[in-house]
Length: 226
Image 1 (cartoon, rainbow, N blue to C red):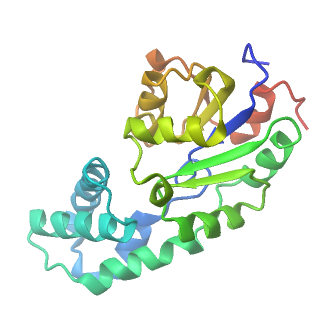
Image 2: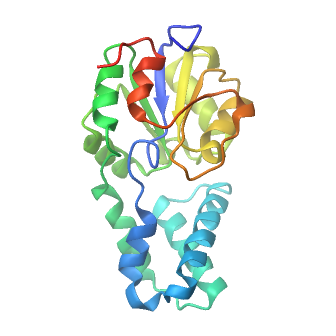
């Protein structure tokens, strides 16, 4: 076992970590020929940056985060922004499914420790996406419930209170140092797992266990390989 404790919960980021967060493919599809190939990569890059920027201010529903980030990215490349396209992107989110191997790994891990989701999704989307994972979760905590988005530190304070735990009683799992693992480290969560899916740089100084295959996650908790 990689950790010095038997945690009370394993807590998970969901979108990108467990769910294949296909927002770039969805935006390409919905914008279609209106998004010129020569600026598409820049549009998607700046849209991601604007999403996290929108998450760090006062709380707003996630459909507004999607819309505002698309509007700002459109303005930056001189593309006409269309509200109906932003709504279509947001409404596609609950259809996304898990990364390969996630359902199997979660169900194995649930035999050892209760599972919790803390996600930047709205409540309705969080519930539907969790259903897509086909694994047992004790608690699903949404940004709508918390009134903030990660990486805001209050998200983790809220989670501690909701679960009735201290930071040393959790293992937190995420594919994002930017949204999750930096804040988790600041808030005193020593036991962390980085699921490196190649989207962000490894920030090993945050003190996490790094895996590239979700099948390795139950092994970190002392379970044998299948």
